[in-house]
Every structure is written in C-alpha cells, then in structure tokens.
Image 1 (cartoon, rainbow, N blue to C red):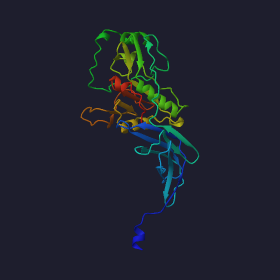
Image 2: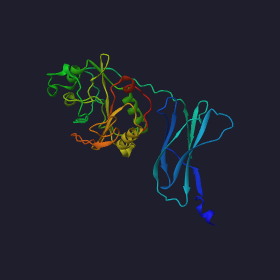
Image 3: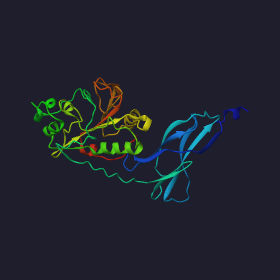
Image 4: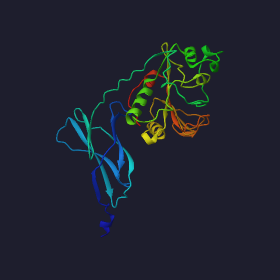
Amino acid sequence: MEEFMKAPASESCRLIGFDQAEVITGIVPGQYILVVSGEKPYLNMEVRLVPRIYVQQPDYWEIEVVGCLAGIGLPATAPYHVWLPLDGILGTQGVEVVGATRSERFDVPPESPYIESQVHEAGDVPPEERTPNSGDDAGAEPDAERAAADLEGIDFEGIGPEAAIAAAAAQWRVAKCLLALRDQVNRRAPRRSKASDGTIGDPAHMSRDSDHNAWVRDGAVGVVTALDITNDPARGCDAGAIVEAIRISRDARIKYLIWNRRIASSSSIGGRLPWTWRTYTGTNPHDKHCHISVQSEKPLYDSVTSWRI
C-alpha cells in the first residue's frame, strides 16, 4: 500500500489543437528548434511535443501536440507556448506538426526569408516608416557619444523631416533584421493596429541621439536600427510578450528593448547586469508601443534569422 501511494498519479493524454508553429534556428550553428503555441482547454494541463517513433527516417518526422492531465482538470482555457530541439528527430525534408484538428509541415533547414531593404532618397519618407512616437528612446544610452560632426549647427526643429534626413544621409534604409521581425509579427497578427509603428525618426529625433536616425553607415547609405511596434493584444500583438521573448532569447542582434517604462540592454549599463530590466525615465512611457534597437554591425543588423517571439 505504501509503495502504491508513492507511485505517480495516472495521466490522461490526448492530441490538442495549436494556433502557431514555426521552426527557428538555435544559438549553435545547425541547430533547429520547433516552437508551438495555442490554447489548452484546461488550466492545469501540461502540453508536450511528442515525436513519433520510426523504423527508418521519414520524409517529414511527425511531432504530436499532446495535452496531459494528472487528476481532475480545471476547465478554463489558458495559453501555452512549448518548444522542442530537433536534434536527431528530423525527416529527410523536415518535420510535421500534428494537432487535434490539423497538421502543418516545415522544411528544415527553413528557407531564409527574402527581405529587401528598400533604399530611399533623402526626400522619400514613406508614412508607414516614420515613427509617430515623440521622445522615443530618449536617454536610452546615457553614456553614448555618437559622432555627428557633420550635423553641427543644423537647426533640426526648424526644418522638415525630408531636409533633416538629407542632412544626415543622402540615402537611407531600414536594417533587414528589423524588417524580418516586423514581417514575423505581421504574419502572426495580420489584423493588428499599426498606429504606433515606425522606423525613421522625425526632426525631434534628429536633434538628439536616437537609433531612429539613419546614422549607422552601410557605405554611403544611412541605416535605421530601431523599430517601434504597436501594442494590440486584442488582435494578437502583445508588445510586452514580444520584447520579453526576445529578452529571454538574448538575441545577439539586440542593443536594447523598451516597454512600459522599463528598458533592458544587452550590455551592462550603470552597473546593472546585461538583459535585466531597469526603470526607463524617458519622456515617452512606451505603454502603447515597444521599441527595439539593434547593434550597428552589418552582420547583425542585416541578419534575417527568425526571431524567437
């Protein structure tokens, strides 16, 4: 009887549905990770990704999305987010995610998304690229001493945005990694609001240190290394969840993240450890959008590897 009482509780497991699935690259070259998310029907249900067993390698290795209950289930829906390294469980072409109502195949390695970063002339500022967020990222880098000798003496507040950009760079574009991130977010939440989206800054940004300025140089072209994403959780775009997922992943492309009066940097700032949240004291609280700034090295800012969001 004592041995019976020590035995683990019996489990009931079954296939459950999933909303999103993607294969991302790991930190180690050649490593791939399957990430699946959705809603589980019970609050205390544990969701697992369970590979099927094969005698020989299939074209697509099937991986089941399984929900397990130990004991009585609490009938309340709750989001889940699970992942599985694909080491040793890859088919000749990839993997197939199998849920209760549908399945989805993924080629592994995944094809790199084709991201084109359009080069704009100084006078060409598409409305969808101009950030509407005043005071965005002000004071984010307290120790920054960005050289801008060619901009000295220019009254940015007294000129239009096209002239301000022309003063900084004859041509400009957006970092490819940020376009890849925005594309991922758009595919996940196609109906989301973009009211606070943007990349290139206005004259107020040009008058101070900001990654919304095209001050990083790729030859003669200025590169914008910041992106704002609108918070719209009702339509599938939770800005807080996005930046927290990126912070946890410690993506090498990141310089800093700002969301809801907090900032996290990939380097040590003011004695604080890298990747830890600290209070953001800039004028914009970032409670309607999140801000993502990336590094100024081309192999990083133009990397289109999938983001872990």
